[in-house]
Image 1 (cartoon, rainbow, N blue to C red):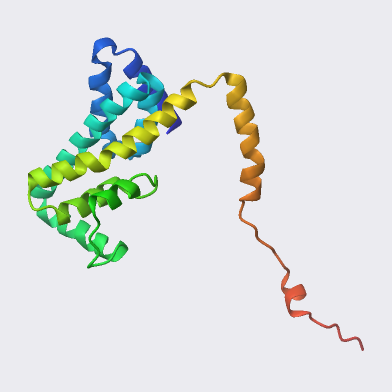
Image 2: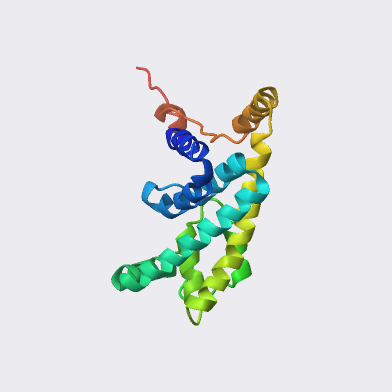
Length: 193
């Protein structure tokens, strides 16, 4: 992912007037490279700033939602499989509102198109789906693009200090395991003759 971000930033930064179009295009091809939406939004904040990056991210994410809608119509059997997976993960009778989806999209490890499927199930038609999708995409773009803009304004010293401050937190949150030998666990007594 580190190499992908370097390539992506280099391409977009050298794009000149086409940089916004390239960035929006990255949102559209993002699923092919298994890149998270959050990563693209943070990159947009680092490259374009908070306001322009948010605007470009909202456009790109909404176009991605549009493509998802079209793909569900083109591939109904795949959509049925996605619906079955959604029922297993979220529940058969669970219907999420647009505001619930907007909040869940802020959680980085929840799949973007799974939430788009939730919006698709509660939408009556294409227009309702696109309106709901647009509204649910705004908080995601604003929050993570702002974080990207904030990170890009750090000096190398501040970034180093923050990374050093994270080390104790990472250590405290590590997985704690205790290993014991078989003999210690069962307290095997030695019989001497």
